[in-house]
Image (tube, rainbow over all chains, first blue to last red; front, side):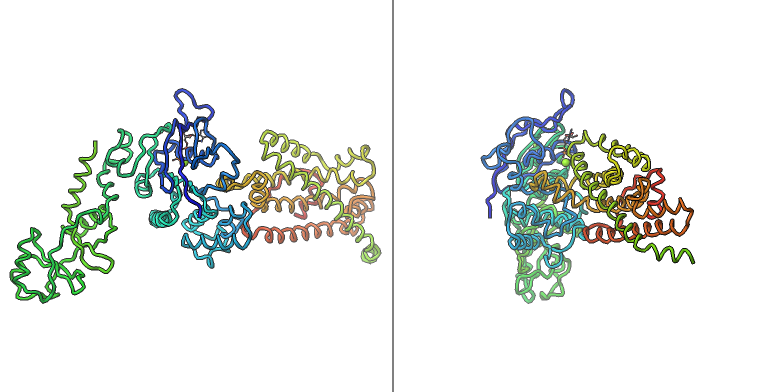
Length: 380
Length: 233
Ligand SMILES: Nc1ncnc2c1ncn2[C@@H]1O[C@H](COP(=O)(O)OP(=O)(O)OP(=O)(O)O)[C@@H](O)[C@H]1O
Ligand SMILES: [Mg+2]
């Protein structure tokens, strides 16, 4: 497996013929470094130079000035064909070869590199499986017999075929419906955990940028880099009015998408089991500012809540006295999702459970709001 | 039945003329294909030459076939070139139109993907662009074949060493003998239909990935020679 390599832009400028005064270049003096193995998302309004920046990496477009390095090598030095065979490329329209089967499509770069038939075939099938397409079902089909989402997966498999250290993706999920897009995004993140490629990913959707990027480069019309940083830095401290407007007024809320339940200090849940002594349970509930008692089973899995007043009138604790339910979260739930689930259910607290379903603690609306306040105070 | 006995008497002649007809059609169809392919590739590589190439082949296409055969006669004499050269020239526009449309029709994202994967210029042409243009290229071959099979008859104007089945048509006119005209016209039509059918099958075989609806581009023109081809097509 090839190792990922860093990608560096050094004062890169691209001016198309006819650009001059009052007609800015497509990319102006772009400098940034994407460390090896990281996902850098280029985001910005239409026409801000995202595609141009990306295509200069594999020399589909040649820069007017400046340098681009992969590892320590200037892309402008050496053979352009060899360069391209070492860089994966995925575009919105996919661009599968209609006259070749899915397997042949995926094996394109290995074929150009002269791999033997058997090795190409194994590699193509391995990659199809990796992107979630059963080779037995899909390998012999032509692209016209695939859905848009399936084609996009094949596009990703094709880009990965020769195990390139760098992957360029230009709005790869821009043409599929939101549900498929969400799934493809999650699959790419899962793949990336395994592969750790250096990925340059273009989108004009700030939410996608925040979700996919280890780093986000916000580009401004005219090809200026408006800000470069982690998603959280960009949401917390927009460098300019432009960035603040581009990320949106709800950036506090968006930041919640970056924080997960595991990042919070959970509130301990006041719990009791059926058969426990009622008086003791009452005392415990009274000592807690939270006026509810959570009934759990022997494995510590939640059964339901009993409220304070109800507790006063009970003689014994049984499973059937528990009433209202709460949303269940796990460690990976984002605070944004947690908040919306709580608002939806109209309750104060959600229960955090582990993989076995056992109660770990509580997350309350208040805790989440506290977090947004902290986020807002970080801002300018 | 004088007609029947005439026909039976001339079966040997018929076989000879069918063979001649196929030869006179096949040579221009093949040479025209090679020339056009080279010109089409040149035209997509160098957009400046494209206009002149297409215009020139268009002008040639408008020259009436009988006139062109006659014009060449003093230059090349009673030789096979005299028939083959005009017939070849007439295929150029048909081929070029279809080859260029086929190459133009390759989706830009497919070209971009091919470049980005690291295809060289010729590799891209041979492995991506030409295969994808194939439905229209073969469509051009069908049209050029049918058209040329029709036009071969007109080469009968050069005398009885030419014309293929057209020989019978010219003779039939001269003698005002209907069966002889039919003796030339009917097999010409059948030949054109048969060749078209075979090439249509081939088209499907060569491009299993393509939709079945690809239609070749027929330049169309006003020429007496086309009457025969038009009847056959
Ligand atoms: N071949 C070209 N000739 C002249 N100008 C061009 C060319 N290609 C792009 N441009 C211009 O360069 C600028 C940047 O284009 P680019 O395609 O990089 O934008 P983008 O950020 O990818 O936009 P989008 O989100 O719409 O895809 C635009 O103003 C565009 O009009
Ligand atoms: Mg773009």
